[in-house]
Amino acid sequence: PTSADGVIVSEHLPLTAKHMHNASVIKTMVTSQGAHEQASYLMHTSYLKRGTIVHPTFGSWVAKLSGEINRTIPMNVKIGGGAGGGAGFLEAKYGALPIGNPKQGLANSKMAEYLDETKFGNRIAMAEKLNVNFSTAYPQKQVRAYSDLYRDAVKLMKSDDLNAFDITQEPESMNELYGTTNFGQGCLLARRLIENKVRYVEVTRGGWDTHNDNFNAVANNCLDIDKALSGLLMDLEMRGLLKETLVVLTSEFGRTPNINGRDGRDHWPYCFTAFLAGGGIKGGVSYGESDDRGRSPVEGKPIKPEDLNATIAYTLGLPLQDVQYSPSGRPFTVAHKGEPLFDVLA
Image (cartoon, rainbow, N blue to C red; front, top):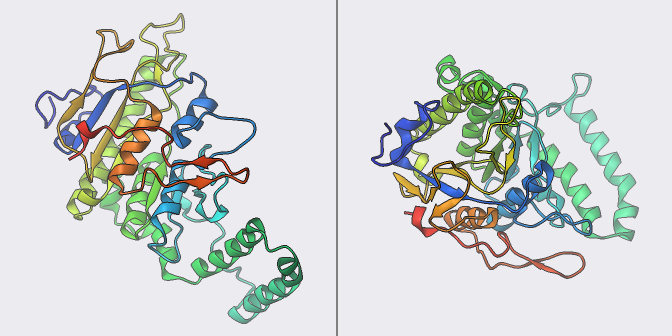
């Protein structure tokens, strides 16, 4: 049983089940890609991977179209590693700030012990002096982006906003709520960043490629996911942030209904699920149905990655028709040709 009538979740997610009155699930997700790299690229960008162009990832679109909300912390942060954070043909400053280990915060972000403010300032001034002729001779966007990156980094190093990345400032009760795994601590860091007006935070969690020993692996993975996700939802709600924060959980594709010879499941792009909770979401909704084996959607329309991204973008108030042009002059939008799924929106 869950907190929403008619909404069913896995027996491995008992804590998350208590939050389904604030969440919707889309059970008719489909994708055209069945390999990790290509499917992840499509999920992150809404476009197929091509050899001639690198598309902006969704977080980069969010940062670009949202404008500066916090003037020191980047608007796009990715926690936990993995591909899918680049700015593509947008300015480099819109790419994701990577945080590998959330417990370590933002690495190399403090001044070296052998430097004081004067020496550090002199070094920055010398670097700018050496660069001035080159920057003047080549005033291209990429050159400006390189200089802006260093300028923004120095600004963050000197700002109190740097504390947002330090989860050691949290009480022990927060570790108990979220869990002490990398994913749990990543979700805790995400909450701190959201509190500091970071617009887009992605927390990754691997371990789902269960070609072997699927059932034990999924049960163990869900212990981590369940604690961290439910902790995040509870914490956001207690702080009054859930109504203005959209929480999304999904993967690049599903897993086969059939069990292989190694007691595992293989890649299955034809049917999987997405979870959405919080701001702008109609709680207690289970959209669509698959057949009795989970092979394909039989009720509700198939929802592609670009449709999911359009739904997220619409909820965030982003202009779906805003056109950004690649260096070759081709037009692109935040969710390609995707359409929002209004059935799950409040």
